[in-house]
Length: 242
Image (cartoon, rainbow, N blue to C red; front, side, top):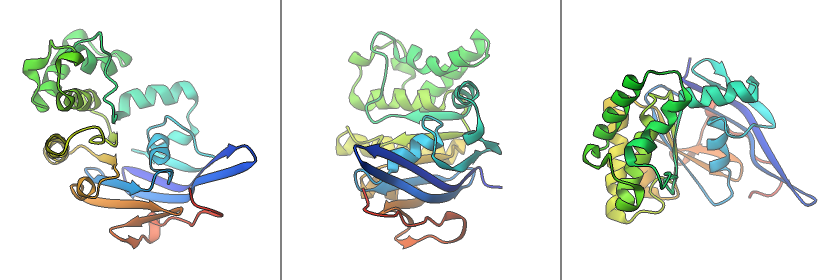
């Protein structure tokens, strides 16, 4: 069984009298330890798919299983608890709390799960060491560079030992040199810690750092420049693409 199994996923939005369908029957398998990148034009449904997989949004049709749990059938309360325990989210704009130190920002996800204070301290220390920021633990976001802020965001995403890490344009606000460093860090965490990761990006070079590349085009899910088949096939969207 795959770690992630997405089947026949449909998500629609209604704007005025128009129905927009960024995802129309998308199916996908992700294996444990995979590093997958997802590209596509603006409005193609990349972030929509990411948010569905993270349990932030709900599909109109279809199912999502993560580690054997059908998250599309969970109640809102159970889904929130599941997300806290199983999903690490890396944001484009870091989403750090400005009045908290780097250490306190990384600790935040652990406050949502049952854990002793000593275990929280140990995990935060290890996460900051993993991203090379142990010496910046007491700094506030305003005292950090953009790349350091993103490293704090990555530490926060991995601190709870999540089943899956999702990253939404993690290098979108960074310069080329810093982007290369962050991508190298993500690759190292994937290889050395066996973290399963799905990264949305608009950058060809960033996508190429992943072991597997997917693309959403006109409602179709493509892999490595060709249309996927079998469990990872995607059905064409009806009507105009978005």
